[in-house]
Image (cartoon, rainbow, N blue to C red; front, side, top):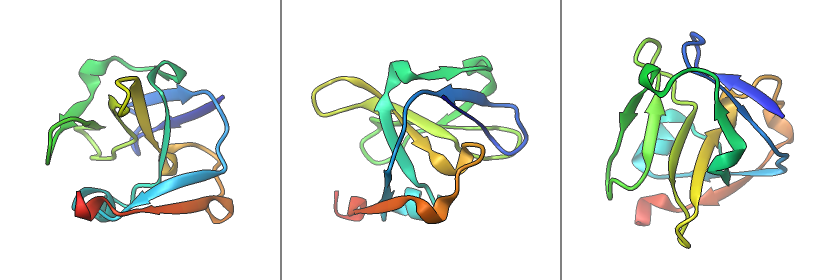
Length: 114
């Protein structure tokens, strides 16, 4: 189990699982924010603060709810659906406590071309 939050701690969450690699997307949104995304089934991420504490941003095809803190602006995760329709969470591992980023394999994703 991993714990994480936005910078100020207004948004807190736990996510279950292990990862050895993450997606590093080059789309305009992900590259500007420096996202390193770990995709998990939505049921493996539990919010420790109410959804009302978050703001949401949608762009491009408006299919992913990019959640962020209205206080500090940090964006710890987003919610969407996998191609098969399964509910997913895209967790920004930079917002998980105790992660050593140098040991995480980054998979480049060409989101700019979508």
